[in-house]
Image (cartoon, rainbow over all chains, first blue to last red; front, side, top):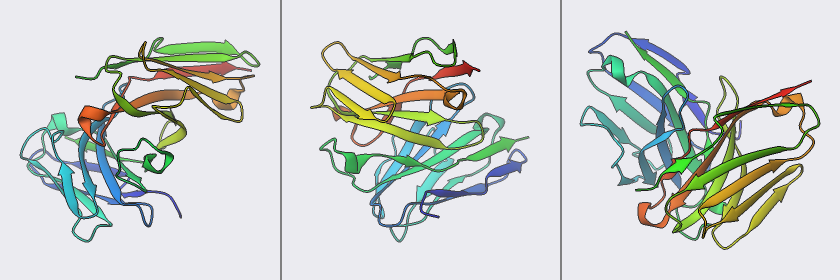
Length: 119
Length: 113
């Protein structure tokens, strides 16, 4: 399809395990974003990339969280030594432009999310 | 720090009534503001993006207004339908925060047939 895709859609893991969440952005989109959403709240920013360069990782909660986008397309968000508080919906978004004009090309399009449950 | 607030948290209206959803933000130095729709088990669907230089944006039955000076945006949905039932989120891009979106908590809308 033409939209943002994420896999897996659901992930159940045991505390202490590492997990890798994948995001496939819309083809040709320069910017890719990761957000985390708790139940009943709006998404919160984690990190974003322009092409393969990680531009801002200020939202990553601690050093157990990392993200990469090595070829400027698919991105992986990795959580090491998972904890129960990491349980949430992880959402990926992409935009055609990573500019700062505020224009329509900067519209962020979201994928369906990966629901992570840490037992 | 930017704070985005959406009140009320939930809203129920009879079919056919117009919907008015409110979004307020504390930092008026924004690039743009986006309205999203969220359906259970699905992703966020972008409805409208209003650039900071615009006062309003329209798409079909949807109309969004932006008043930067007062830090407010309003999403109007005309002649609501049961299919409009969803959670509506607003998000702003602050000039001081690069490309990240700061979201409100959302308004959960139920349109009764």
